[in-house]
Image (cartoon, rainbow, N blue to C red; front, side, top):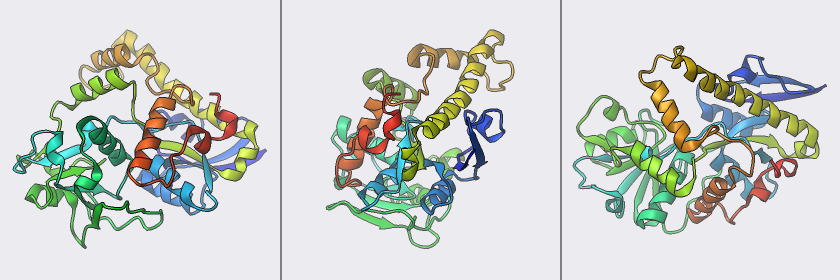
Length: 329
């Protein structure tokens, strides 16, 4: 039996893998998780896992190495619409997306984190604001964060980027007005605390994001499942890994579908059943699909953004990044 070490964050749709409810056929798998998903990324990059969750940009940056170490399975454990990831100082005079041009903008963790590439691409496509029009400050949102020096950090020509100094946080810089805006996977604590100095660029972001989906059909993915490249020579093994992740996801999807009969009595979020029904009307029965066919348009868009933002030397394709055995999924 093949032994694999697998790293994945504990989402509701991966829990069945971590607790052993779902197993990988003919594989003795050791699953590990971590409090911070970026810890899994770092451990995968340094060689601790055979298979692990990896942010898309972390995967793609490695394709510029002479011998890229990973390929991806078309599994996307983390998705989120990202208009909601743009925050502004309310005294900055920023009233709409076009007002971001010429401004100082913070970005969480690294220039081009997954939750930053999507909104920057959307700002360029739909509002004409490109990264080179802005000044960028990279760091931690609510806590000081050192540079992620364990992953390549390309600096695109013509883009002004600096890292925060010791003790600085982007949330504090935003609240004080030292930066005008922030793009971050983490919500600034000032906003959560009700500070009048910080707001979202799109206050009614659910409406904006739903309109984006209706217009594009894209539900942005942040992460994928990476495998060590030598495992591509074992298509049956990787197909078994793919099927196990898909089965774990289906358990969660089925629980929500069947829970609708009882108005989701096991979930304490008020009005959850109506939210579920609204999402089902817009996104269909499976709004979290795996496989290449259902996700090619979204993946191609991310690959284009990654290249346009100077983070990939060439425009990659699905055929470049996914294991050949799963391209027909």
